[in-house]
Amino acid sequence: MEDVRIILSASWVALMLTYLLGDVLRIYSGDFAAGKIGGIQITGNQWLGVAILLVTPIVMVFLSLTLSYPLIRWANIIIAIVFLGFNLIGLPTYPSAYDKFLIIVGLVFNVLTVWYGWQWTS
Image (cartoon, rainbow, N blue to C red; front, side, top):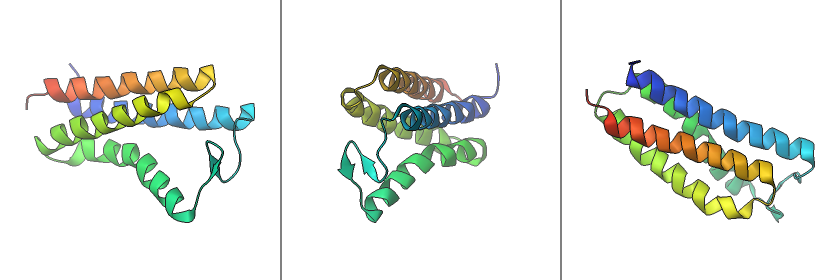
């Protein structure tokens, strides 16, 4: 079996690409209004919060390959569960079928991240 660190890192890459694909499709489909999320005007501090949230999977790619066991095992499990909850809460708010599909794909990557992290024994 491949090294768990590589699998976990790949799951974060896949999650981030899924989010990015959703953003691109939202722009091309016209389901996007500049400066707004869900029709609500977003402030600079709120955009900072969004940036922190969305950079987390990118940081997890690096940390999954570099942090020591068991710290990274638990970080992957906990952060993937947080993202799982965040996506479950957001799922009903997306009106389009492609968004719902991509959120479900993201949920699968979150579940896989938790699963691999949980099964990981040094």
